[in-house]
Length: 239
View 1 (spheres, helix red, strand yellow):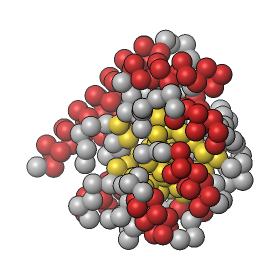
View 2 (spheres, one colour; view 1 turned 45 degrees about the horizontal axis):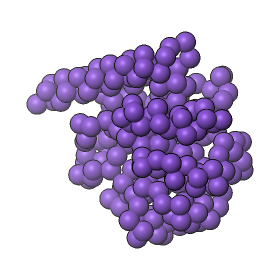
View 3 (spheres, one colour; view 1 turned 90 degrees about the vertical axis):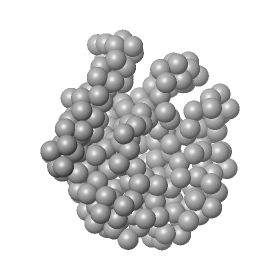
């Protein structure tokens, strides 16, 4: 388990009319990567960014690109992202017919490979693949419905994170656990305490309305610190 918590702001929550300035602000904030959703409007009812926009964005920042593909045709989108030059590609278990082949294809290009699970998809489905993948992305809301204010984080979010962390520890895997979907300032401490080490940040954390970007950033670091403290305390009790 990593002590370092990776901060991956979702670019679709930034100011899409001023992407260059939004990215500059994120660079200055010291975030670790840009989380970029690539959606085909078939797997999920959304399509926030086109391929050309992502390609042009690549030319204005050196931040790592953390790509989350929500599509029916994974092969085509993976090829497009590899051509752009990204650092991690995650695709969905639910739409992958040949999961191992895609993982191997991505890793042959020197890119980290991740697999995403919809909220109700059992983590057990990745038991055999765990040793090969670099990241498990746990969706905590149904993908593509972030704009629906009625779509709340699933009640079993913390338990699922803990289950995946226990599974990874049992296999002595250093696979990262990324969480996405209403990863709020209120839920971050318990998600980090349960074992999450990569946070996709959106409208309920880094971009929360009513506060400045700097205020949200400060509150975010406080939430992460609280989660790490709870994780450390739990580890001491286990000893």
